Image 1: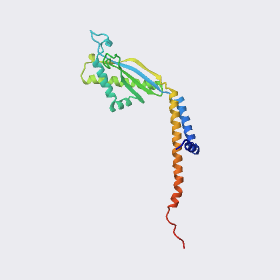
Image 2: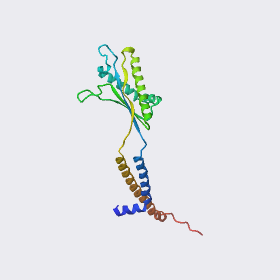
Image 3: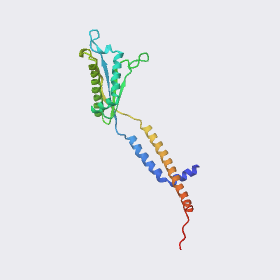
Image 4: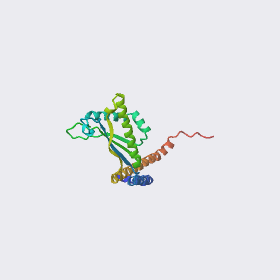
Amino acid sequence: MSPGNVADALLRRWYVVVAALLLTAAGAYQVVRPTPQYVGSAVVVLKPPVTRNQPNQLTNLQPPLALVSYAVVQQLQSPAGAKELKAAGVRGTYRLVPRNSGTSATPRYLIPSLQVQSQASGPDEAVTAVRGIIDVYTRHVEALQASQNVPGGSRITASVLTSPSAAQVQGTPSRGLAGTALLGVAGGIVGALWLDRYLMGRREDAPGRRRHAGPVPATH
């Protein structure tokens, strides 16, 4: 198909191009003025029990604590854990990310800290979801130790290292507008060409159908 044929087809199916432009404009408006989204986050750390040799719990963080934290995260990411979080009022998108507080020379996830994130349409909802996740996480840590009959004074504890807070998600409107415009133009052109070929094909087949029709019975 030559450029002239493409131009003729677009002129014949101008209404498809106009509809695509209107849809593109609606999509561009959503990109320029999107629905506000907020991400709530907090950091939780597992601390060993206080001992005489180590009165400061933060100076006695050990890699096995990170393994305990990871085991609890695996429980919360299971289908049963998702149901438990939903029952606790956690809605929307959330993430549980073990933090790598070391360097390239230290093992990954050496420090038993966990970053909790939740995305919602409002800051209060995002913070509430983060707090709900922390509560469920803490209960699992306690239940894990209770199942092993660990004495109360010798148990590890979950402590909030960074208080829950929310921040608005800031996107890049220019990229969104470019993508929307590209999709709109491509969709309009492809849709117009397809419709033009379809209608022109039906128009060409119509005389052939009449020509190959069966013989008309004679009347007396």
